[in-house]
Amino acid sequence: MNKIKGGASCLLLAGVLVTGCSSTSEPTVSIEDLKRAASQAASPTPSPSASVSPGPVLQVGQRSQFADIETDEYGENPRAVTTFGVTVKEATYVDAADIGSGEPAENGQFVRLTLAITNVGKANGDFTSYGAIKWEDEQTAAQDATTLHLLDGPELDTEYKPGQSVTGSIVLDVARKGGTLTYWDSANSDAPAFSITLPTAGSGGEA
Image (tube, rainbow, N blue to C red; front, side, top):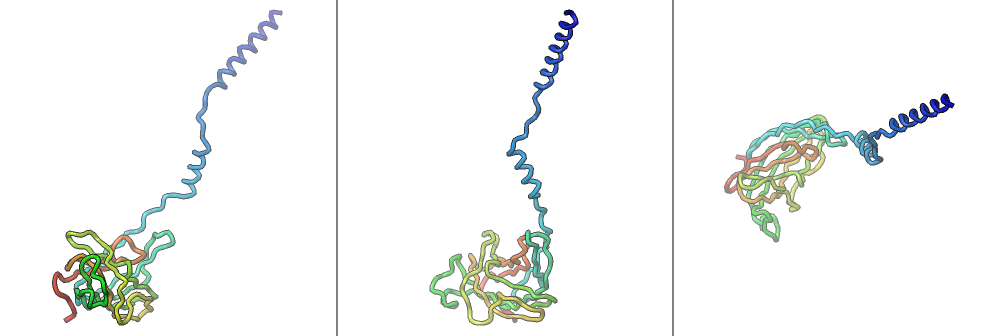
């Protein structure tokens, strides 16, 4: 009888110890935590694009070159596809009648900008001015300066094969005379491909 009682006591004590051990709480992980971790693993934070240096700053009558940039499908790893030559032939301040418009400039002042674009590289490249030219000065932050006003003559916005060139004019809408125009390649949002310093009065053209 004593042995049985002793055995029962041991079993009871062992049960208490087991129960005490099993009652220790462990950290729990919710389903939402698992989903969040899986999502982060599947969608790593993209690395920033390589930086691109600003292109040349030109005045009327000057010529330079700029790179036609493209990126991968994620908007990263910019690379030069080809090289364009650009000559600023003219920048003339005009009014609505000069461009056949019945409405005044929305921003304040129309500018007729004439450029000569040449593909001097070894691969096809695109030049697209609409939506890609901004204007700014010391008073006003950068604003889209492009318009839908079309002028007679060749269109600058097209694909250029190596050796091809176009001299054409576009109408821009800026806040006031002077300031700076910047052309932003559609695949490059880090820096302008080239900039143009506008005359502060009258108009400018090649000598």
